[in-house]
Image: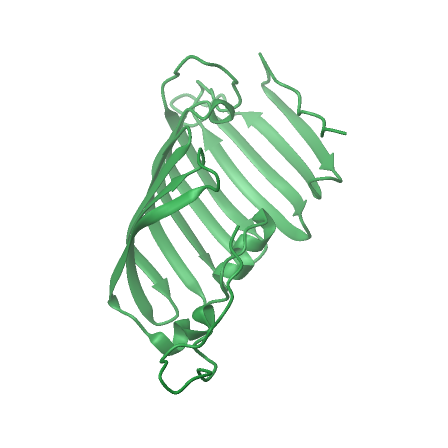
Amino acid sequence: NEPTKPPEIERLALREGEVEFRDETLDIDLNAKIELKRDAGEALPWQATAKGSYRGEPINLQAKASADLPLLMNTGNDVPLTPLQLSGQIGSTKIAFDGKAGALWAGQGVNGLLKISGKSLQASAAPLGVVLPDTPPYKLSAQVVGKGASWSVTSDVATVGSSSLTANLIFQTDTQPPRLTGELGGTRLALPALAPAAGADKPPPRSDRDMPDERLAVP
């Protein structure tokens, strides 16, 4: 009764085309159009658009990549990181990435600037199956570096409601359970706006406590 493993692509030769991907288990329905621009001097000739839905949320994405495209390779050999740009929207969440990536399926790295914004962290994480607290609208600009099981996020520009925050986080996926460590700081912390995330919008059950008891489900 083990789930079927996805197919491994050893070699893919494609100049242009259209891909339909549907999976009821993952609850994804995606249509992608891929084109190789032949204009002289085009730095990112691979261009793709993807539209559909994932776990009930609409998807609208655009991507550009360099001619040497290792993204879908599943190889044990290190390959150079190549330029990659990604922008679009998943549900109410807007994302943009400008940087470089290697063979993603082999966990060989990402390095670039990520910008993401949405109506709440909870709404943005829901399509990924990750539980995060409900927050006011947020914006994040961060340098993301990932290789293998280790991912780091460094942000000097992050706002949640009227709070202005900074973050230096490391996420390890090779531990059980996966581990998130790091530091959070900032120039302005608006507790009323962030209170629902910790249950502080409710009165504490005891007079000798400033914060109430609150369960927070995390993966």
